[in-house]
Image (cartoon, rainbow, N blue to C red):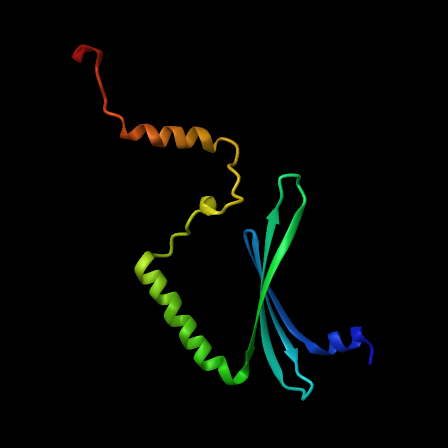
Length: 124
């Protein structure tokens, strides 16, 4: 069997979740014993100053015997986060390769002036 045929045989079902700079791949694959397991891959795009980019990937393998406990722990962890911090999305501004979009500097300047005291010329 060729490598391509082996890969096609292993790929049973796939789903893709695009989330900003990250993409998540959920792939059902087949073992040599013809059983199924899940791979979850996070692919994150990094752009260099010269415009070139690379992807960093992380993958986990999840087997059927772990599905129930995994789902339970995932639900507990995600519920905890939403209960503690709400569902508001945290800004990507804290990422080391974050680049301001056009006009953001003006908005930040306007926001930063909110802390100033209002002084009237009549007070001087």
